[in-house]
Length: 216
Length: 275
Image (cartoon, rainbow over all chains, first blue to last red; front, top):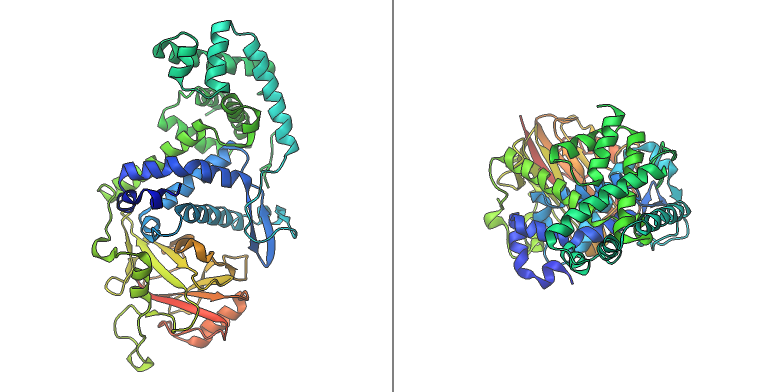
């Protein structure tokens, strides 16, 4: 679905800057933009095809995601969108330009980018396997499994429904025989216990502090 | 703030217990502290795996998307407060049926012969029929956060304002070079920016009109008076040295072409920076 093509009535309020239209636009496109920013893309700079490998760390990704929409929701950008071409392309162009502007402002980052001669221009990259992330994912999967294994049955049922099956609080609560209020309280408690578990397992200690972004 | 207090804030961020102000304070610290940032990232990745499984380790979680949303609209609210009014379109009658039509009306204007230069403060050069099309638009964001498109009727942007440019590359050029020139004939490099010295990639045609380049702070490296913005579209990248020579040759910035040769399609806007 293309938001402003399939929901034409949203375009005028969007251009007018109405809050509900902007919120709906954000909710619709934020996952796409976040995915684009984390996968990376290729671009030309100084006559050379370069590749931006993507923001993999939450802090940088969140900053770029927020800044993309702040720029896109400013009046000039809203009014520049012609309402005919897919808004996704327009939004991703803003996102890409934001990243390229940032990279061009940092000489060190530019020289650190890989020169990739094998790709065509501007192709979106497919998800690449990353060894570091795989290790981290395995470590976390193991920690989650150990944590869940220590929970009593009702809490396990809620945890699996809420976090592994991505059900809503209400749905997960129903599965565990809890009211919404009880489910909300249990979730807060489980998060707090999981945080304590991460602390006691040493997950938050003894890791390498990167001096530059792992994604560059 | 000590590192241990920051670590405690990071824990509270995981538990979704931070106020908006505390979140802003935390992010301000994290932007300049690699150690704390690494700890924050590690915990947020744990959140990703908690809510999305191991496959989600490189993917923003719902919480991250929601936290970014809060920041986006906090920024919008700040802009509104500065402007002293709710967000709404200022455009009115200028918002015609299609942006393409608006661009055409603005940019495909006959340029008077050189003898009539100086009449009026805003002149736009457009395309010659048969030439591959491209467009350039300019917007001024003043100190109060109010945005408007610059036009022949209203070409002025205050020195304290921001200039924002938008390009459309209907002619599918491969490169573009965007530069500003004032009466001192010293180039203001918009895209590329130093140390880059060659044209940058032009926006894809299928994206239509898109904001281009970073916001231009007129208070930096500009002065009150005429400003001509040139967008030079080409298939072969231009070198900054060639653009500089063309600027010097052209003399007084009055919107006249820079004459960079065949293969370069130029769009220019003559604006006025108000004191």
